[in-house]
Length: 240
Image (cartoon, rainbow, N blue to C red; front, side):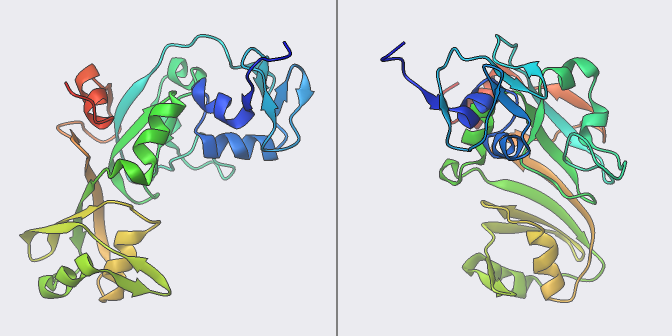
């Protein structure tokens, strides 16, 4: 229609719950997206909301049940759907029904880290949690290979530059000579490992225990459950 509103195709892919906006852009670059059977060749391409969108030959813009999961990621798993080297991924921990519904992880934990991970097929939900404006604080339980100089890590709240990158923690909690809880707002790649490495300590175990109001609880490694409606509302900052 002449006056029909159009939207960028990567935003629609996210809205239909197939992938995050960033992942949708990767799919377009890789030539895996078609609209009305024609290949999408540029990231900013705008399409009508009722256009038929395909990824890898599969039509994705149909009504789908929204899925919201919390998983206790074990160490030794990658936060990705598949790995070209055959390493285990968090997708391997999910049943086919969830994978076929386009579930993806919201944010990442590195290969050796474990703990709380949110998975969903709701791209808008993922975007709102990940966006810096959400101010979501994440908490990590850290065990090191030596005694922690708490007088030094107190300064991390003011920020510290490491190899040209500025890292800043929100707060910390003492659990023992070699164990602490670190709270982060932004959470840059390998931030905690880089911080402790900067003061000569190795991280023996790194486990995320909270994302905003959501706690890891008693989930065992590899176990998952569905988020409750109240938990979803709290993560989005809505009144419950």
